[in-house]
Image 1: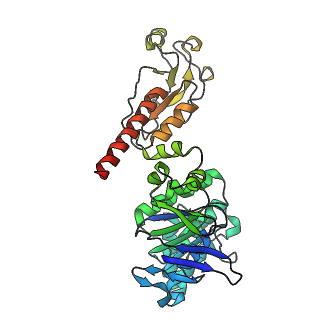
Image 2 (image 1 turned 45 degrees about the vertical axis):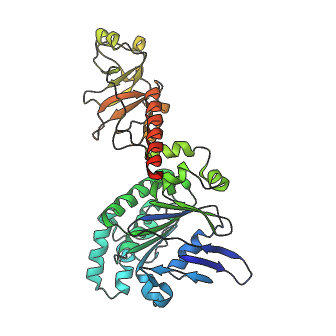
Image 3 (image 1 turned 90 degrees about the vertical axis):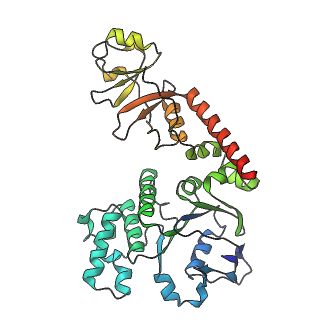
Length: 371
């Protein structure tokens, strides 16, 4: 996008001299307050809206030179509330664009069935209608429909904003999984900075008046906001968000406070810790307990307090580890393996030391780049 402006007849400027280079096979997120031109920008990419000035190039070619129907069929488009055809079954909703491109009904439906599996939809839903599906399922159908003709570009306009937080997280994770497999060029619009940070390879923060405030990878955005507007938009907890980009693999775990349900009085005493993490027979966490309250030889789950949310070292970030420690009554995070078995615990102090080390390593890397 080269100096792209959209000005309406009444003089309103929706997008003002926007220049962006969107990387191939990545997720570029447009984020900003309501009315900052995010959706207008997205719609100019597939010519639902034509720019007043400037040029939009796709693989080096001006999109204005392409027939508009050809351009739009080369781009998947996903909107809020899915925008499904209510009178068509799920399989026929997904098969819409392939059928428009001249595919046979059999081939289009076979492609639809393949995509249902890819986006995590049960094949039994194929003959249902949109109103018979939950909001999250409908959004998955919308993503499948956008992918049906295997377009190189996928445009997504706040696709997950109408569902509850749990479903939204699942849809975000599903999108990242699909992107890892397919490597599309995705332009994603949201007003949620957490969603932008989680999904974006690059994040474009837009301000009112349709101007670009900052364009950077998420970690760089959080580390160095361009101005007071970006800093305010990122929120007071941007430091916590930044921890999402620091790995937890190097955390020093300890197993001393970890004991089984049948721990003896001697084992409880030998642990020498004010709080003990009790595990079941398979080594999965059950909860924290103070030594004086535990029944030696037959610890009861009712004697325990919740252990919070565990984290997986090497997979989860320092943010996840810190969150786990903050939620724990013992002030320790619980580390587990991929099967949910306890591998150790780590204190808030140790996590704090790891955070300081990560910041120091970051500064050293920046110094190397500068030199």
